[in-house]
Length: 304
Image 1: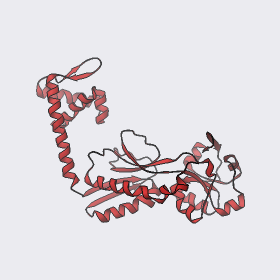
Image 2: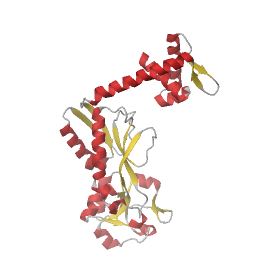
Image 3: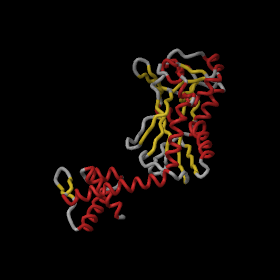
Image 4: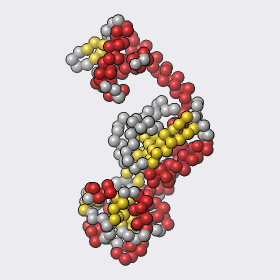
């Protein structure tokens, strides 16, 4: 561990008031924090922290070091930001759900690359949860509530869960008048929906309906193909069916029973020390994504 890193550990211990809290804030083990603090006290040949049963507090020597170390670390961070913010180059790693990424993030990436020719982008499209820290990702698009409260998020829109079917299917099978009527229809569901074995609906309190899908598919595009072909009723997100609803290939079913909207968010680790390339894409995405038709269309946004 270098000397600057030891100072960062010491500052975190003083600010957090305990070794365990400092370990959590720095995402390190308590043992690593203890070793760093011991090494620093050995180097200064004096006690820097007073340990009580309830809280740690700095000694006079520790308090003096804390003030100088905090200023030094702040200056170091500002120097890094100043140096990187003017350099629009390097690699940017992004992740987004497959269909949302294909339809909306990929075009944004192409425009960004044209604007900044010295930046390289790796775009990972995956419907599974992608851990930013473990996988070294700069920005993620997340649909739904965040699992990790330590991340920085900016909401750019919201989407609805919707039931859809083709006009031809509804003409043949009839239009269900309530969620309970779905038991008389062919259903198209994802593998995750089948695992839960039910669809939830909103109607003066949540209502749950057990489902027996005729077709189970593990990805969105094939569900759309089946629904367009009149094979049944599918449950998808509004951005996924937006184009089909606008051109009449699909119709919404049971709009009065929609659940509450689901947020769409940009997520990153630390907005204060963003490299210039990350900040540039973050700002572009925050500016342009809220303008998407699937977010602005009132017929898709309202909670019925």
